[in-house]
Image (cartoon, rainbow, N blue to C red; front, top):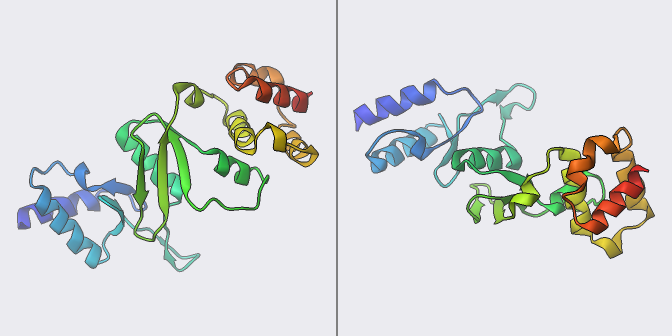
Length: 199
C-alpha cells in the first residue's frame, strides 16, 4: 500500500492548486488501493472530495479566509473534458444569466453530446447532463447561443417588451453579419425575434 500512497501523493503534489481531478486519472491497476489512499488524503484535508470519484486539490483564499470551491460550471467542464464531450448551459441558466429571471435554477443542467446522467456532489448540489443534438452544440458565438437557449426556455408566447428590451441591450454592440451563421441554426421564430431585436 505504501508504494501506491507514495506514487499518488507525488502525483497530487505536482498538480496545481485549485485543480479538479478524478480517481481514475491515476494509472494504477489496484483501484481499491487508489480509493483507500484518496480517502486517507481527504481525511487529512490534503484534498477535498467533490463527488463520486471526483476530487479537488484545495487552494486557500486570503480574501475569503477559506478554500476556494469550483463553480458548478467548472465542475461540469472538468467532467466534460474527461469524457471528451461538449456541453452547453440549459435554457434556464441562460434566462437567469441574462437577467430575464431572478429565479436561480435549483439544479445545474447542461446539454451534451456525451452520456446523459445526474451527479450529486458532496454538498448536495446536483449537476445534470441531458443528451442533445449536434445542431444545438454548433453555435460559434456564445452570446447568440445563450439568447437562443433563453428564448427556447421562455417560449414564443411569453416574450414581452421587457424581454425584448433586455436582449436588445445585450446585443447592442453586435453586428448581425457576425452572427448570421449562428442565427440560421435557431428555430425560425427565434431567427425572426433576433433579427427584429438587432434591427
